[in-house]
Length: 87
Image: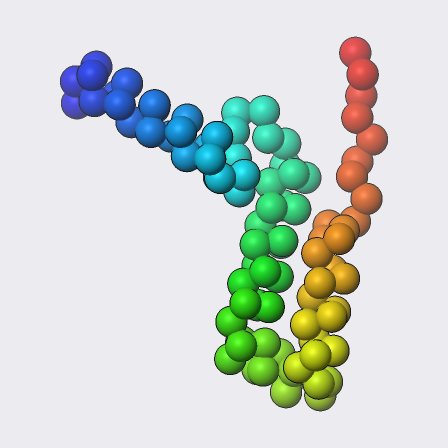
């Protein structure tokens, strides 16, 4: 692999990280990463009707109730953020 290839790969990665929030960046902490993963998962569940219907049947709830529950879980999917230490 040549130096120009590495530069091209890094510039493509930086472009993806700037364009899409969920791809992360160097300053992303563990909590923010987990929140992105959970929100992406819930959005996928809501957006794909067969998966939503599967969850509704498994939990014996209506599909609209499951959609509402997933949207509520998207607000704080991993609980409150941890306290930051200001040095």
